Length: 324
Image (cartoon, rainbow, N blue to C red):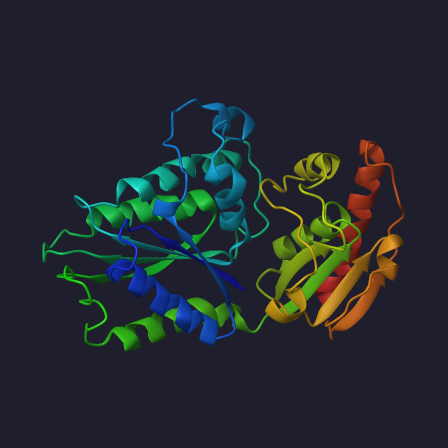
């Protein structure tokens, strides 16, 4: 399970950063993988309202949103947004990231595409402010609610703290450890017992992501899946993306990855090899049960052949998740 932290404060080692790291540390203690986006260190251009995303589902601005952040938002099982309060909302750096999530909103609501993880992804807010104002967190709560909806995550709650201003204030807050432990438990435990399955093909760009997407869509509450390739391509196969789009499944921004490090960080209980070439893929370090699915090789320029492979994979996945 991947927990993504979004560190929204421009202050590098301040109270917000400490709060988020304590939260992620608790998640790691429960076996989760974690990674963090330090928003202020990223190149995120503000939304220019070009409306391209609402017509094509992509943002024409090329920066770290395009190169990294959209992919992380899509891969995450849990997204934790941590922010200080600036004028009853988030800092400008974080607001730019939130505004640019309009691209994911458009793919969902304008293009009617289904993110395979949408039904299971969870979102959580960590926020702190210097004052004790009664309405201090109302603005950020509304912003967070719609941000999580845009990225395909349910809003599972928040931890908010008043009168946090001086360095070290949050670390000294009474009850912080109990707050975090309880929140992480509620957030993580419902997904913690899922079986881990890794789908593997030669390049991680076609067969394996299709099998992964159907598995997440059909049984993401029971199966924690991932996909990889022996020699991964830089992007997913465009023909595969097109034929999955015909089924309403959104493969946008997901990217192939290699096998290096997955045996330790993901530790799958089952590895499913797809395609004739995949049968010879070495799996050093992996200890899970290995299964091979016979998927005929096909011309990736041919949409009809891709559709045939897609439908065969859907059939195999439906059977697989019934008995898994």
